[in-house]
Length: 235
Image (tube, rainbow, N blue to C red):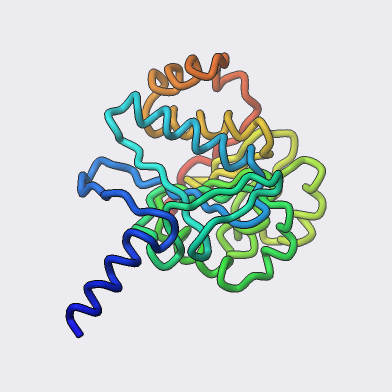
């Protein structure tokens, strides 16, 4: 029996959701888990993945970036790109920064109990929770935006406000940071939201190096955004 249990553990580790890579035990390493699922949009997924991976190269691996899917096996994005996630919900390690991209089926996704429950449980434990575009609807369904300021895709702000009356919806901004819960308008502005997180937690020099690698001009003061000052008891 012991041999059987050991063999099953190895199978989950190496084949559970594509592959698993060694996890470091360094206290200063930030585990960035990016949720991927069928119908996820390329831009809202790739933008944070790109930015955070490049930030890792400029900080001697301070960020460890990986993808997490609801189940084992490949997923297909809205644009038809097939991906093999690093982990499934069953095999994912602890996550410090949870990234929830947008998906084309976001309205039905908010009614998926397993997906919403995982986001809720993981988000409550994370240091940072970040959504792009319609990913905010998933955060709202998980209750992670209650009594917080948040934004989403501009054309969906009215629907967002109607669906989640406990959220203080912000308009005419690229992103909102409410004490570590960062929601963005999505699309190409997803790069700006990710660069903001790099600047906030890893410093402006690292953000500038990453931006230069993308041939982007990065100046946070010129980006329309809103930050909520920390309050007693906030995350």
